Length: 361
Image (cartoon, rainbow, N blue to C red; front, side, top):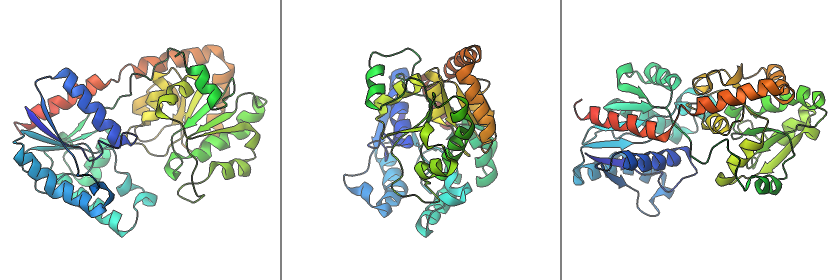
């Protein structure tokens, strides 16, 4: 079987779509050597122009599918061609630009969202990461449930609970304390870092400041309603003494940060999947998170899940994880077991099955 893959994000490996495309292709090749994969990539310099992106998706990609005589095409993000030339699958990770008002953007972004919402009807199958996203797609795009296939994501093999020789050096480089809880997940308003900081109104004093909140990642350039600056929030909540900022964290250093944490806090208001929580669990770090969207699917019984604004409840869970060794050990065991249910091999096999079933659709 010859498959064309839209590789618009191939050279953006730090984006979610870029990671997904590269990991999927790597594991498809590993499990099906007979698969003939053709990566259709934008020309150099073209990515900088928004109109070229639409032209690439709607004209260049479907023409290339014909030219390469492929059996199936896959667009690994929400941008199918309106008139596909071969059976075409798309992956819709979430409907954030459609469902969440702060993410709808200006007129050009809203027009693009309307375009891809319409063209999604042309896909022979839609792949998505979670049953929560499947429900959103069926409800808001009007697609029949049988055309929307749930295939969970996975994490890189470097996310493991086994300590690595370089962990101590990584901890020293970021100035990490001996004991800490970790927030790593971005600073846009959906991620709700406010709740993590608010929880430290209780956690900080209860633990005498001995287990600060480590906020990892490049801080927002500007303090806005869309990207609230955690430093201001920490001042407003009176928790500045209990917070440590790492700044930018290299991808290869993230596993060490997870492994060193007593707990991982993730109070996000909406996720299509939630890779950071799976990364944390794979590293043996218990999760305290929100009970909305896809998060309960990923965490199951391997973490403490609460409403995203229940900062006091999250504080209680963090305090118990730090002070109750038996509880922490049980949640660590559950986290590792739950993370083991996800793998890129599984993702690739289920995607390959979707390709094959599309040939007869």
